[in-house]
Image 1 (tube, rainbow, N blue to C red):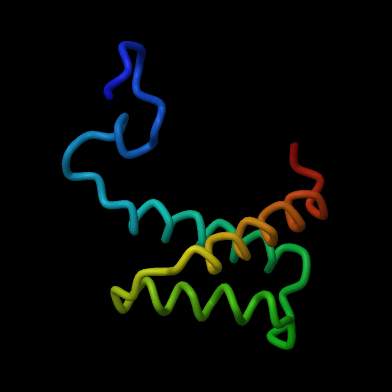
Image 2: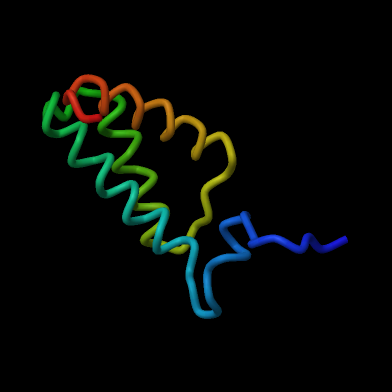
Length: 85
């Protein structure tokens, strides 16, 4: 049953032609930059994990829910370490 108020789901408010993978790709690039700003070592498993997910997105492979949740954990962790609000 549709609601009478404004739509609140992301896919409801975005127009036609929006590609969710592009948005996710942009967020993963931002996460990569955050991690590199704190610990740019290639020995960092979190950095390698993010790079692997970016490679998957570039090849057209969709990420699963666990990947998104893990990226969210890293986002919060590195947001805290970089001192961003």
